[in-house]
Structures are given as C-alpha cells and as structure tokens.
Length: 249
Ligand code: MF3
Ligand code: CO
Image 1 (cartoon, rainbow, N blue to C red):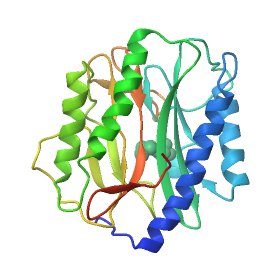
Image 2: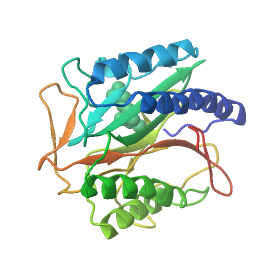
Image 3: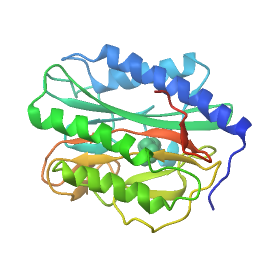
Image 4: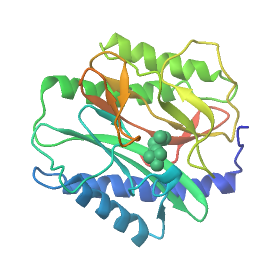
C-alpha cells in the first residue's frame, strides 16, 4: 500500500528533512584524511539528537549505526568502524535518516576526501545530475517507470551502470514504504504517481558493471568488480505540477 500524506504531514517530514540536510553539511565539514568513519557516525548521532531528532537507521532491522557510511566500492548500507580511516582520494557517502515527531526523512550525498581521480569525479558529478534529471519526471499522473527509465538513460549515456538489486522507496512513517523505485526501467510502466506520495529517490551508480555482492556483515553492499560507487538521494513529495524536495536544496 502506498501512503498518501496530507500537507500537514508533509511539513513534518520536511522538518525532519531540514535536520538531515544540516547534518550532511556538518559531516562534510569534518571530512579529512585520518579520521575514522565511526567518529563521523558518532558525530551524526549527536547532531541529530541535539536537534531533537532520532537517527532512524539505528536499530532498523537490526542496523547497528546512526547513519550509513559507505566508502569507494561500498554502494550502500556500509557500517562505520573505528579502524577505517579516511584517506586522500576516497569518496564517502553519508546516507541519513532522521525521525522527528514520528515522521521520517531520508537523504544521501557522496563527498570527495581531498583530491580524487577523474573516474571518481565523473561518477560523483553524473550520479548527482541523474537524481535531478530523474526528479524532473516526477509529477502527479506520471508512471513511476518514467523516473526509473530517465535515471538509467542518463547513467548509461555517461558510461555508468545501474545495480538492479537496490533503489529508492516510499518514506514518511516508516523507513521503507511502498513503492520500490528502481533506478532502471521502462517509460510508461509502473504505478501512476499521485499528489501526496512521499518518495525517497536515490540513484546509486557505479563505474564498472552492475553486479553487486553483500559482505559477511549482511549489510554492506559492494560492487563485485571493486569499481567505485556514488549515491545521491532526496525525499520529495509529489505535487500536482511536479515535486517538492523535503530534504533541503
Ligand atoms: N537510504 C537507505 C535505504 O533506503 C537507508 C537505509 S537505513 C538502514 O536503504 F538502516 F537500513 F541501513
Ligand atoms: Co533511502
């Protein structure tokens, strides 16, 4: 079942989304070679709680950290560790879920650690672009497949691949709600978008082939070929004429 949210509820999701967005900026300001991913996760938890929110990833299906932090070939759901230190040339993704007054927002951003190579720059640039290109399709009455197909088309045009096993989702009262939003698909297919749906749209693209593995921790999803991955995500509300971003600009 796909939830339809009222204007009041959407405002509440947006308030959670503001904390998310501020948390991304705060974490980005801390990035430097030598700090651990666990330090960043601790800071994220402190930041969200000091703003009255709850890190909604923590405890979700047993997930052990405040946010997801994924490095380089880790695509999504990475687990922060004390002994994993950032180094120049890494790319790091923060995927943050904040719950505030019972409503949840979800967003992700990939950042460079110092200077990164051309392959990673290309990947980050076009993955971020693919999110906005996909969002342009969002509007009441449009098939969800148009969003998926547009992301895939943009990714492939720029030489990037789309893992099939992971994608976006509805969000608002729960972390993962219907519908699943693939980052590949066909125009004209899928459910029709309706005003009041709240969707977390999240292209996760890779420079190599699309195949993924899951690590022994049962969470971290990595590229099978070791190629790097980037991830950009916003929570948006579907409107009559388009969409509203609820997780900051
Ligand atoms: N944005 C991620 C997703 O949609 C957040 C997952 S939280 C976790 O899958 F707890 F499942 F890791
Ligand atoms: Co998500």
